[in-house]
Length: 433
Image 1 (spheres, rainbow, N blue to C red):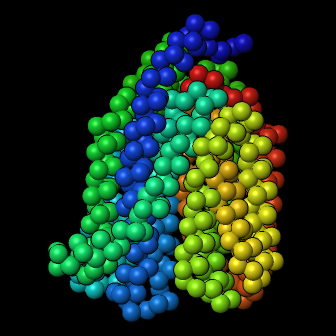
Image 2: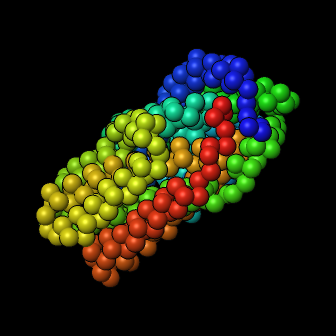
């Protein structure tokens, strides 16, 4: 077949990945754990700090919104930097930018300046973009059958920061007092330390750079030259296989729709619970269960995508999201039903995100991957920010039922995108990168 990689070259390319890939996944997982500590801490304290600085409870939700906006804005620039200079420089740069955001937040808390606070929270959102792009970095050198598994291990690493981070508020208050800062600003000292540590781990540990190494292997397999700042030209056979961009944009769309569904429903769950007599403690337990659903089982979904195929796992994820929307839409005052629905919401999101990310990597030629991955992260965060911001007005107008119904529409659209992708999807553009 024209453009096919000779068998000896293919075996050599695959063999050259094993050792570095295992270490790269471990480095990315460690950096994600460290960076996640800062993200989890800031998200938990951001809303409280906004109220403290502005004196307006109604603005508290802007903490998560600004985080999503910052991540959305950073997605494409970080991907472009990765395409030019490699993953190591892109990810470490993102960690450094996030440090600047945390410093701005501390300064804003000290001088009680709301605009600087919102700007700092947005810049800190770059840390979330780094976490998202780390999962794609784990797929650069992975063989196709292990791509979803390796990607999912990095996603799972987010669990540590998501669970431990919010519990740093109390020790952060001690640090804040010791430094003469407002107590709620102290937690962002931990954020700075965590982002610096994550950046150092990536900078010194992510060698060889997975994206640049994947390009080198691809060039060696096709006897084409490659430099650190260029992508190998795909062979005519690969260009034919990847001629249609439709599968790439369908993969981007289904990931964004699943994320919008998750954010919109999750954002209004605390209000629904408290409006029906639930306590703040119950809210905390429910959100913790939801977060566990999002991350704890992601390696299982990665393994399933590798064995069963990514599209079946994506469709299964949308089915689970549908069950979650039914639970929140018709659960009424039953807190048990709502809690179960939030767990399913996290699980469905995880299935679509893990398998969909692996699918996007599979249907995109190597040279175009960073660009498409950046577009996916931007679309994902933008969709979450828009529907998350709109969910309050929708909830106020029609309650959880109407909100869940609209989310159900997104779920149907996502499932349709997955079916269309299955039909439009070409044979994998390459099996050695």
